Length: 168
Image 1 (spheres, rainbow, N blue to C red):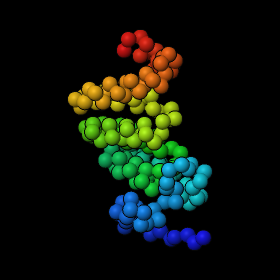
Image 2: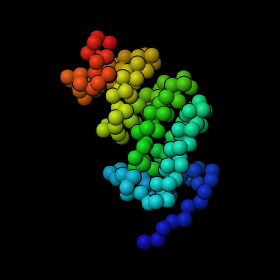
Image 3: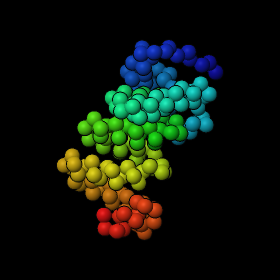
């Protein structure tokens, strides 16, 4: 099996965004559903870690546009990276700080669809319901709350469950 040598820099990122969805470019062998970080090559795993660290750094410095851009690159090139759920949570927060509720809700949906087992889902559902209400989409907000309830109907999720069962 031969391995494709990838160009680096902005040209590579542009090519991945243009040709990657069409399956015409070898953008990240960490791609494709059904795998895990363990299935990624060592070099791809290192690149994904570097990109995740960039998302974290940009978010912590409140450079939210850069954090969102880095998160999108990470999620596009390495969809099987094990910490993508964390990157999505940071991207959601960055989108909210940039006053982009539609983008934040889209990222919330991406988290729910791609990482339903994540420890961050319950928090994202609650936050998503609030964001949807602010954006005027009460039906979507109610859907998030129903999903949250369905995940734990007895309210046994610790602090979050106590808040909700206390009539929040």
